[in-house]
Length: 302
Image 1 (tube, one colour):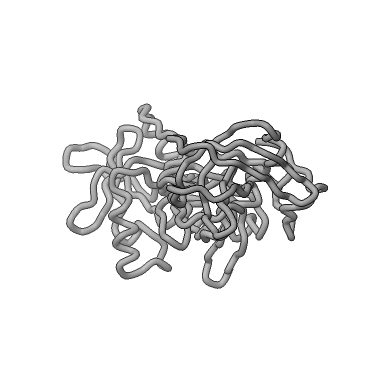
Image 2: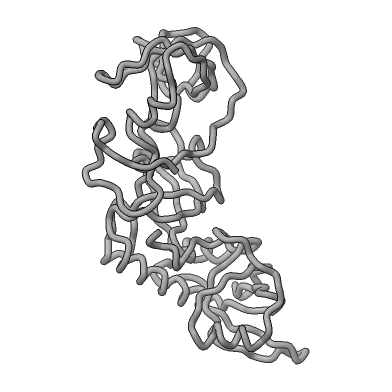
C-alpha cells in the first residue's frame, strides 16, 4: 500500500503503554510521525494531547497545513478534540510541576505525508483511507496524517446512490484509488468503484433460483432497479409501496452475462442492513481505463 508509511489519523489503535523519556527523545531526533489523543482545545485554540502518558501541546499555528485557512482552519482544529492526531515531536520542555511537556507539530506531520503522497501516489494508486465527513456531493477521506481527499459521489460505486451515507459512515476505514492529482493545489481526488469488482465478478456471487436481499436504488416507469452489491443491480417489475433505498428480498429469475442483465422479482421488504464492502483490488494500481464489463479483467478477491 503506497500510503502505508503515513496512515490516516485514527486508522491504527492508539497505544497507552508508557514510554521511557529516552524513547520519546529518539522519536524527536528522528523526526518520526507519532499519534496521540487530543483531550481539549484551549481558549487560544492550542490542542492538548496525551501521548504514552506524556502531556503535549500542538500550538494553533502548528495544527494544520497553511493551505487551510479561515473558517475551514478553525473547523479543522476543533474537530480533532476527542480524536487522535498525528504529529512530529519538536521539543521537550519541563512544566511547572517538573514533568516533561512535549511540543508537537501536526503541520509538519501533514507536510511529510503530503510530500510522500505527491511523490509516491500517482493516479491509479490504491491507498488506505478513513472517512472524515460526508456531503451530498461526496465523501471526504483522510489518506494520511489528516491530509484529506475528495471522493465524489459518482465514483463511489457503479450502483447509483443519492448520498454517500448510503455507502459509508464517518470513521469508516476504506480503500480507494487516486483518480487525479493536482500537484499545484496539492489536492487529491479519489475513486472507489473500480475496487469493488467487475460485472462478472459480482454476478458470480449469485445464481438463478436464489432468493437474496438488495436495496431499491431507482424506480422508473418500466421497472425497479435493485442493488444486489454496490457494483451490481438487477431490474424487477414495478411494485406498489416501494421507495428508494428500501431493503427488499428478491427472487433471481435470470442472469444473462452476454447482456449484463439480471431479472428479478421483488417478494417483500426486509430489515436488511448493508453488508461490509468487498474489495476485489486491495493494493497496487488500477487499470486505466477500467473495464467494468470486460470478461478479461483479472483481479484477486480481498
